[in-house]
Amino acid sequence: MRIDLKKEIAKFMKELVKKADKSDLKTVESRLSTDLKIVESRLSTDLKIVESRLSADINWLKENMFTRDDFMQYMVLFDEMATEVKEARREQLLFASRFVDLDDTVNNHEQRIKVLETS
Image (cartoon, rainbow, N blue to C red; front, side, top):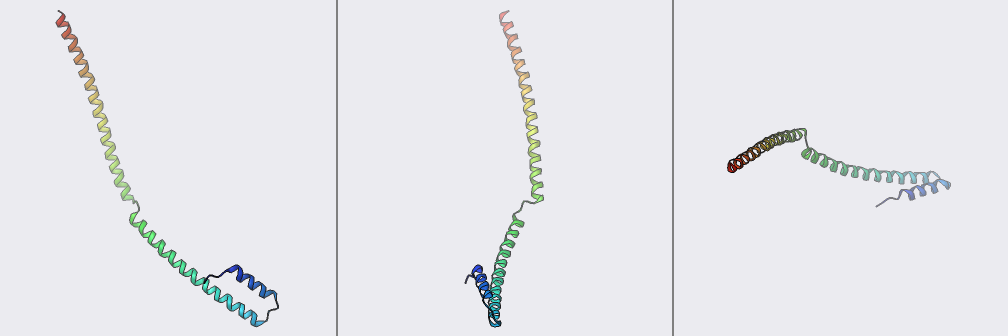
């Protein structure tokens, strides 16, 4: 049973316009009181539904939310990974410089061998 408030207000205004006696006023008051109780009941029911849904959502968020401890765990992991990357870069630079040194040594040996072969 759905109440159209605009129609009810229009009825109420029409009844006020005509010459109303006490029984008419009591009837209107009774209808308005009944309608108000229905609206209050529906609002109360809807509010309870919304509250239960919100409560469930809040509980889910509390259980699944990313916490400060989770953040700190990730930060420790990122720090460890950054340290490993820095160490790998250092090793890569060291190997590159050793490779250049070895390349120079090999070139030097090749030149010396050529000199020995030609002499």
